[in-house]
Length: 282
Image (cartoon, rainbow, N blue to C red; front, side, top):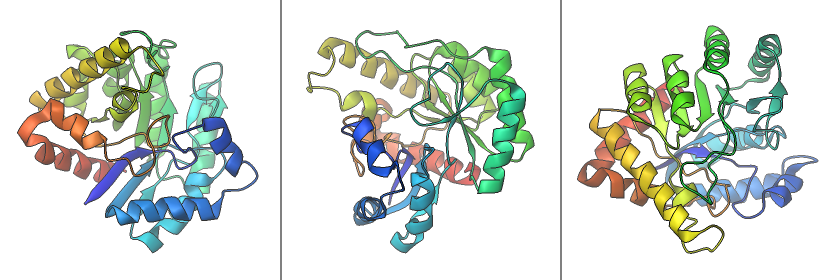
């Protein structure tokens, strides 16, 4: 059985601008079908999309049952204006604007809510993010609003302070989760937050020359150490490639081997528990 708990159907793993342009006027249905067929050939039964504002994930969800795939999407991810997320998401500035978007997503059939609450890793150097996370009190308010509407919440979150705040507020899953400390890991474990570390976004950079090789290796080692520590605490970890990100094609099979390097012989058992939790929550 193959499942990927974090993909972006709108992207293609090569050139995000060209990929988005492919769907800008309307979702490219033949392209989506070819991509779903690729997942079907791998025996895929479950895909969870990270969202887009052009309706590509929604179109894929409509088609996915033909390929034997359960497909879940937040529709567009939501991001705070002036912060990371503008290339895919819909923006808000105030809690009221966020609540209105959540209500709109409910009317439009979103399966869950995705919130962008931090920047990205800077792959040129270990320990650096492109921007800090939102204030903890704002993170808590946003997650509370989405939960109050009955939605599970996926958060794009990097950095220990940001992830700690998200877990304390009850985030259902944390995506990426770079540079976590023991407090952040413990907060996720205590809250039952499922971590989808998307190691492929780092591991697949090795040997490409896109970023300094030493930095990429250090970032991957840091992430794998956190994965091992979280598993040792009894934390839930689920496989997600971030397919569509640069160097991560749809149907990538790199994630589980990278997780296995951190988790060892118990990898399949650990991931089956995490996947079960994701499917129950989302």
